[in-house]
Length: 312
Image 1 (cartoon, rainbow, N blue to C red):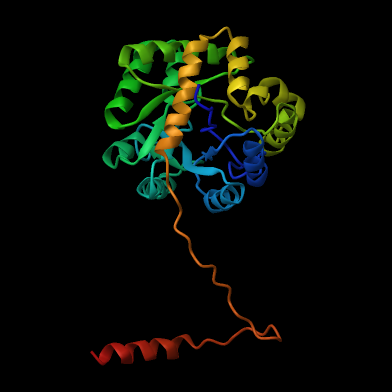
Image 2: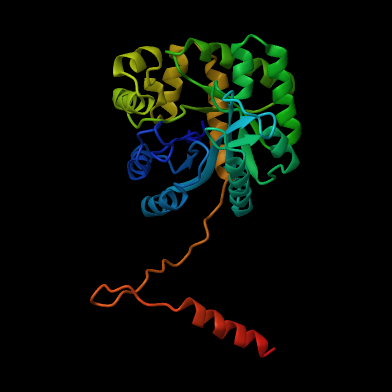
């Protein structure tokens, strides 16, 4: 069986949502004997350089991605957003994600949002896309018992993206996830769409859930008791290996063979993603020994440039 790769991972750059530090994440991946990991923070790519540096130190392959907030129409003033995971196959894929990030921030409504309208006009070609968690558009339709809509949405994505995967998640504590997983299996069969699987990482270890709930309570301006009761961090939001994912599947009485296929596909996706960030030299301004502000006559410099141009 192919080695399970964590392809849906949130770091501390998923602000007020994940408590995972980049250095700890990579170290944990290394300890599990995995050779690659993706970063898919919510609506930002701020972790990329720190993530790559840490991965290179630990001899782990970095996979650059993002989990988008999406809605259907550009400029739509609604907090009804869906999730979508995107992973860069190569450097062009990283550029496409960065370009979408600009569009998402221009379309910001509480969060940076990628509209499907924008996405289909300027479709990235160098990415792998997954249906994400139960908050994805496919998952939401299945939770609302609208299978035909979920099927139509998945077919739409299949026709738009060259590499689109349906994402299973193994959360025994979350009843709606059973409904989403079963619906995804049926859609996969009907549309001949491949499966992947993730734990949707927001914590490193199972016992860290209460730490994230405290963080959520602070950010939501609510009590820990309310947050922990209504929206507790799941133990299955930690990092897992092959055995851990299969154990979670057994807890949910899930089709183990389907999960094994999905695990193989995480390795397949990992092999497809080979982006490297362009290295930039770090320039630090020089100050004199008395820490005085260096004087810079902007107008004189501008005058010099204009003279040089006039020479032509």
